[in-house]
Amino acid sequence: MSDLRAFLEELTAAPSAELLWTKHCAKMAEYGFDRIIYGFSHFMSPTSMGDPDDFVLLTNHTPEYMKLFIDTGLYREAPMVRWALNNVGACSWGYLWDEIARGTLSEREKQVIEMNAQHGVTAGYSISFKAITSRSKGAIALTARKGMSQAEADAIWAEHGSDIILMNNIAHLKIVTLPHQRGDRSLTNRQREALEWVGDGKTTQDIAMLMGLTPATVEKHLRLARATLSVETTAQAVLKAAFQNQMFVVDAI
Image (cartoon, rainbow, N blue to C red; front, side, top):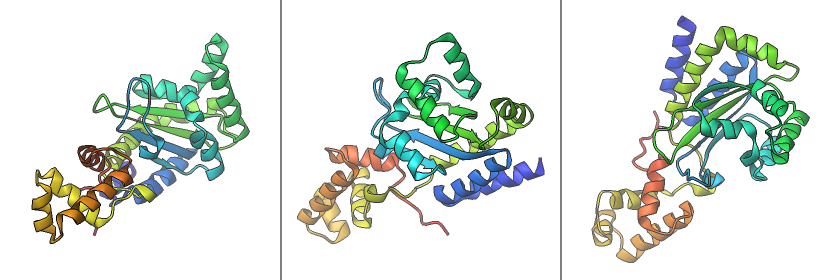
């Protein structure tokens, strides 16, 4: 119990999603789950999980695997992703063999299983987290190390599953509060400040005075912020930046 408590304290004190993820991957590997994908979307709809570029996506799988699974859109056909979207809790990947036996999988879903088998992604568990809004959903897939059978993974889960679920729920709740690197969708300091003032209800004229800029320059920063976040309106930009923890960010010490 003391080891578990110490690890949870490390997670809750992590200043960035990247640092938390490094620690979490190492901990899950101790239980035999050495390849992990975490995904979270704030932009769910009845017909879509949102733009993958807007996902919070953390993984230690190889870039080659992620290119096949995410970049080609194959994740949309993954049976365990379907399960996670419709359930809360943990599920053994033995579920897949039950689905195969019932003949309920589509050809595309079977292709996902075949692709995973080619990459040694054959045994593991998925955890689907309780959604906080109708537009959000998060889940994590824990892949057992190569050579481990599902029966062996189930035996590990029988002994340690409650602790693993707890650790992953804490990791999830922490990740969604942290800023993380977004590549070409990261705002500049000026763009962020302009959006923060908009969020505070200031007009363009107000923001120009507060930032010591001309109104035209403020409009430029807001336009570039909209482009960076791939939205059409400034209101959308404020909402998306807030969801992504890109506003009012406190530098980690």
